[in-house]
Length: 501
Image (cartoon, rainbow, N blue to C red; front, side, top):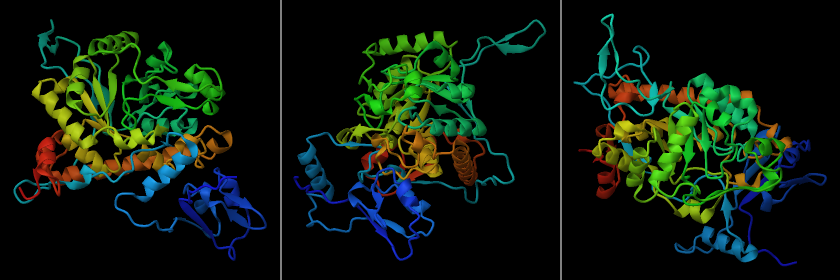
């Protein structure tokens, strides 16, 4: 047997003197990193730092830490480069991963700070004054024309386009049934209903048990057309056409056959046990005109519900978004290069695309310059980590933000980046019945509701400090932002002044 050159990424320490040998850690470890041979024995090579054993150990005697073994220092050949080369030298395979880009690129949100009222412009106390977070997504008319009715009243000459009404400017990002469990979807649907917002289905269709949540759901039509049929499209309050994904722009998706059980097979309308392969492009879309045909076909099929188009943030994103809006999209969903995924080649996840902040500012600018900003709303996604990120994204031009990884973290995800293995110990990114039952959808929904409620309160606090009583007043208001430690070119793209100016 050939010896592997790899070393474990993590080390599991167990205080055996205080361990009661209940084996709960062994039963909870879905990666088989722990076994019992008169005492708990760790296999460090299999540990992914999911922390399930740490959380459920009744005596709290388990510690998982990063392997402290040092490599000979090199600023060029990092530990990660060396480990990746050894892995590929042993397997000859593409490196797969889950979640979002974890390389230390500059996070622009962390270099933006907000304004606050002082002296001449009074702030507002959100505990005493009403604060409005309600957001409408969709096309707004260029102007309003009224006609007089026979009884002397005025009414709109033309019916305005349908809009989505959100009570908060935060939605749940597309994560397909297949990539994540049904209980995860149920939790998001329940939380969306409670908070007056929406969840995206992702490209895996909508399970029949969630049909009653249709008014809080945006259904998705992606390149594989999995689970897409007339009833499914009509169930949602809007439809999303997925063109690209921030974590893997330019490539399709792959749900392994072992994750395609009976329920997923029915929902996706594919045979059990077969790989669900999403083509990289839509085979009926090769131009803006083709996209326009699909948008209007969906509108006709759904009674003219709003249609969103999801695109990854790549070079020249402003021109692409302009074309999408001119094709008739009511919402443009911008997915930044730190966006999450259930599975992607690491080379694509980590090295393709551009930061959300730059893309968002460029798109908002371009649409304003072309006089079509009111023709579509913008949803910003791709690692929105806090209410602060959400506020800054809205100040840069977003109408609303979407959270995916943040929502999963709220219900237990440890961001161990092994979603593609289907062994998620927390029952989130898996289809194994013995694991999915670990996630109680009602408890998970409660945690999501708490998160959204907390972020909403924080947004109101910041609005009050800015002297604003409605989120709409902040949208695209970059004068309320300042940059710290950003170069002049980045500040120019963001249209944000440096701090002190």
